[in-house]
Image (cartoon, rainbow, N blue to C red; front, side):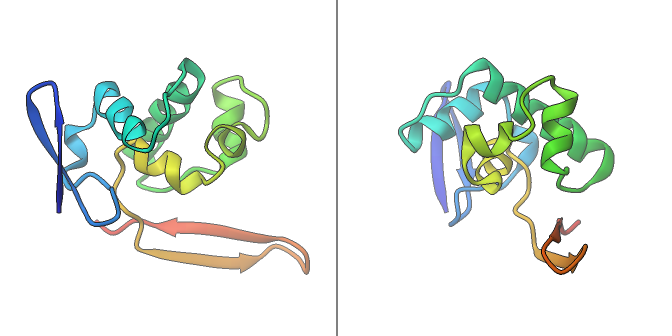
Length: 119
């Protein structure tokens, strides 16, 4: 486990960089996690992270990415454009590491991915 010092407080991360205690998340923590990776979060990115946290608090699930962008009035592919990997946004939002990824085919060309987050 790794510890990250933020504002005089130690925040523990697991071996994959996810918060051990997601309840310790704050915007300051998100910024520190991003800085660890050499990036700086802008206001739009923070909006994405905050919405993902709100969605998770209500549904205990990973949101459909286009829904995130629609709800915060950003372009349709905002999560992918800002973070490239949606799991990176999930991690910076301080949410628990998803366990199983469930896939199902919507048709021959499209798959729907659902991340199942353990309780």
